[in-house]
Amino acid sequence: MRTAYCVETVRAAEAELMARLPGGALMHRAAAGLAAACAGLLGRVYGARVVVLAGSGDNGGDALYAGARLARRGAGVAAVLLAPDRAHPGGLADLLASGGRVADDPFEALAAADLVLDGITGIGGKGGLRADAVPLARAARGSNAVVVAVDLPSGTEADTGEVRGEALRADATVTFGAYKPGLLVDPAHDHAGPVRLVPIGLEEHLPSVPDLEALQHGDVARLLPHPAAESDKYRRGVVGVVAGSARYPGAAVLAVAGALRGGAGAVRYVGPGADAVIARFPESLVQGGPPSKAGRVQAWAVGPGLGEDAEGAVRDVLASDVPVLVDADGLRLLDPQTVRTRAAPTLLTPHAGEAAALLGVSREEVESARLASVRELAARFGATVLLKGSTTLVAAPGDAAPVRANPMGTPWLATAGSGDVLSGLTGSLLAAGLDARDAGSVGAYLHGLAARLAAARGGTPITAQEVADALPSACRDVRNIRDVVPGVS
Ligand SMILES: NC(=O)C1=CN([C@@H]2O[C@H](COP(=O)(O)OP(=O)(O)OC[C@H]3O[C@@H](n4cnc5c(N)ncnc54)[C@H](O)[C@@H]3O)[C@@H](O)[C@H]2O)[C@@H](O)CC1
Ligand SMILES: Nc1ncnc2c1ncn2[C@@H]1O[C@H](COP(=O)(O)OP(=O)(O)O)[C@@H](O)[C@H]1O
Ligand SMILES: [K+]
Image 1 (cartoon, rainbow, N blue to C red):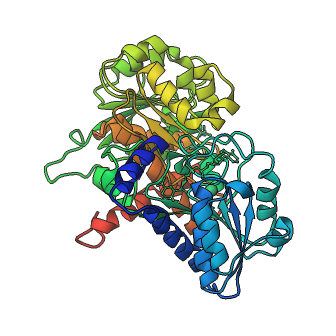
Image 2 (image 1 turned 135 degrees about the vertical axis):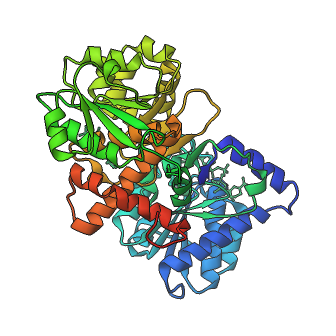
């Protein structure tokens, strides 16, 4: 599990640790890790041209000390000081003593740089970049240099991933002690590039429950349902799918395709797409009539492609005493009060537009504040919420469990019908016994991984059907790390 901690928690852990260490020790650890990462990116340090963008805080200090280390290895290092009289004194002195210099012309230095260290702001930054920093960040981006963000890309909000105004776009980020939530949440995540974590000894001072977390292969392998020797199809769970309409029969097929790959023992389809479903998937059970008369299921997935006239079906499903996933048209048709008062878990899976409608705000507001939006939705509906998009987030109601960010997404998933596959898949995981937060985050992870595998296998663009077809490969991929008998997973 990758874990992320907010600024207040990181600072408290740093204070505890610093009290036990000589002054400056943490900054030297950070700078050493940063310089090593830069050396790796440069390949050859000797003769490389490095520019350090140094703000007035400790983030600038880290960058200056790292610049000094690179200078001692033969790099030509020039510092651009955003506030010359408040530059980190120790860092600047070390850089100058190591053969580095202050740039005469910042833009000339940036244009010729092989590597730029962005030490303008770190966890102390507030708001987007200030006016004087904006042209420098743009010049860094416009150069051929590799741009490395120190701790986080300057101008991004560490706790939320929000970008208010302009922020630096990095090719890579080297972060210290712990991931910050913003590094895993768009739009900041998109500014960071690949993130490397440099341990500085904070780990034992951080609380066991993080502020945000992201599953990794091993976590998904542990959570994935696995049939036991005595399993039968009912013990493995039956998922009910209520999707599709005369107008959108494809949504029914795609949701069932996802559901068949999610680990439930059987898929029961209810709705007007029965003929299309049975033609494509004879292994599914199809039923007419209302969902409540369709026979026992352990969870429902309702909503994809339902169209306008399915309010009754949504009401029927929400009246059940089993976990329910609501997606797409189901989100428009649901009664909020019914969701709030359900005894069994509910998992809502909106994209940004649907989340905006549920919250009564604009789509842009949701996209610029994804973490706050998903938390707000979970609180308002008393439900677990999976907010889809470039970073998918899953929040449970209440503050006890950290929000999960999905690291596996790919923009190729932005294709019609891929959300229907996710609904079926995640509903199936619910029926197989995962709780709503685990089902949502495992579903999003496998869905993203399947898309990547489909793209690698068949090229891009990918279709929703190909994503569904690649789900078994995704399950095998995550399980391989613990397979004992090759091929049996
Ligand atoms: N606290 C610690 O023990 C450690 C901190 N470290 C580094 O220290 C950083 C935090 O340092 P600070 O608390 O000094 O804060 P920062 O260096 O992140 O930023 C604070 C400074 O930036 C200015 N500033 C704020 N918002 C700005 C904006 N939007 N545009 C331009 N300038 C802005 C402020 O006036 C202030 O002077 C971390 O991100 C990390 O890089 C590391 O050395 C590891 C140890
Ligand atoms: N830019 C993106 N990067 C990564 N994943 C994305 C992106 N855009 C959309 N997705 C994913 O693609 C899927 C689209 O679902 P949805 O919006 O419901 O589409 P549809 O209704 O057409 O099926 C979701 O899983 C979402 O997280
Ligand atoms: K930075």
